[in-house]
Length: 239
Image (cartoon, rainbow, N blue to C red):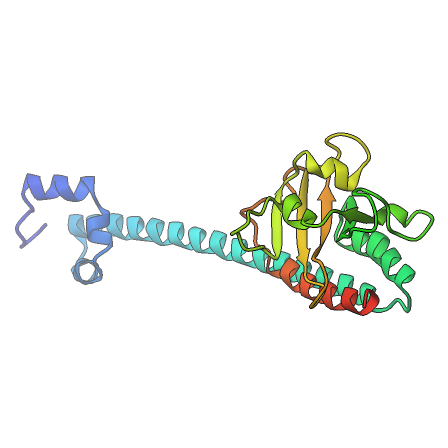
């Protein structure tokens, strides 16, 4: 370093061990780059510039990776929103209750990629587990639950407020709700339905053979919206 005092060995070793101490200080970097006058000093400054460029490239790669993740999440959320909107539109269109149930069991199941859908209604007029749907393939779509059966299926305690949407691994009770043999459904989304004043609560179970499809750590905003729309439609048909 012509005309300049060389750094002590201790300072030099500290910088070499932790170059980010220099690279992370804009004022120090500006002073070093401004001092590039050629010779051996110029070579050292070029080395620092290379480290700075490497550091900026790493940050750029991290930023691009973060952007890709955010964009992918945004597209996934948009796709989920479109699915739920299509499902609601499919339920609005039918002109009778049979058509509504058919849209629920076929269109909604297909749109949301669900393996099984069951509407559970609390009633004292039928044995628990009885099919309440219209004759034919829609019969088992609607299942009788005993009084308090919604809270029992969701595992709600006496003082535990009911959640609108429950996402979880399926338990033994799922076999009774969905049928088709033991452990067919591996995970489920259970929507707690308020059918209005004077009406017993109901539930909609949406089951999947994929154990990872629904879990408690997932967001449920879209399904909460779907629950509200479904409640209003059911109040009209079951009034």
